[in-house]
Image (cartoon, rainbow, N blue to C red; front, side, top):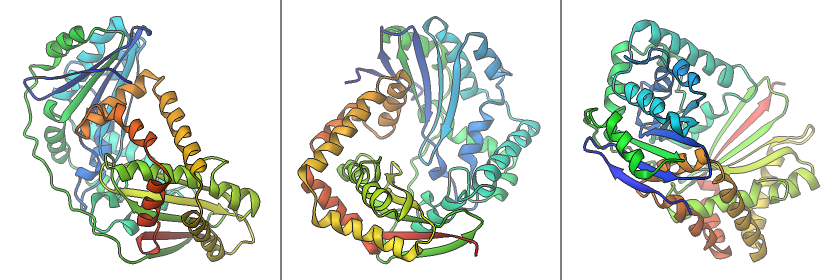
Length: 411
């Protein structure tokens, strides 16, 4: 159980505090409710680009990293489809350094053509290195638009194509910042060795005078129900043939989300999972084979992916996966489900050991509309049973609900 206090400042900033007297540290975490889902199809990659721009300096903090390093702080950030998150870990006595720097760049970020050009170059190089110049790097550039036809999840967080990053103007960057980087679109979590009342007072000191922005609720297009299987085959210079199968599933907060998570663990998480035991270890069809969910706020994907051993036909390997799904639908033991649930419980408790994980977890839960989800989610999982798992499996593991990508070696 993660205990917390929640406050709302006059400018709309949400503050969540979590006290832990067993550490000398605090985590200052700022989550902005903006991700690649908030972009337009003709101009993608802006959310991720702004993650980089936020380290380019602000009016009173020209070198963000240098200031934090002076007090021994660790900091980083990440962007995904739904959120952008920034965190600082430092000694509790130095917390105001983190609050000062975060408030300054929330309100007074430096924008100039030089900084924009530098960060665009960094992101473009990242795009090339991670998605274009390594084996299988472009899988999600192909699989997302195969699985999604309407929802903005159909492109990667880094963007659909390099040209979208290259063509971003200074005016567009400033407009995006002013629209989403506002206190009423942010959640500040302060976790660690600090009293909640003191954390609130310091937050008011550093953030209360930042004006609220004009954040309008965006109505994103709903992804239509997939009624027919989708298939794509590509060839490239890769060492092994691979298969990727994506099934639509409920979004986070829906009970079906947690059931699908258990289903994916049961199918393909770790060496005791069905897919590994039967198709990797026993029949040696695959070199590796996993199942996992993308964990998105809106309806997402359960994915089965693996690399096929030499000499095995890719279509035969695909059929072996389908056979394993059929086996699960026709024969599933209560003990198997209970074991998987207990593994999930252990993973949850282990993750909560880290103060940073608790801090981010609180912020993400709040962004979903209920901060206590951070505690309620594990109870939802513990109350699942075999009937629930079979129900979600029958709902989503359908051929008509599947987008399959065969990634083949060059002949």
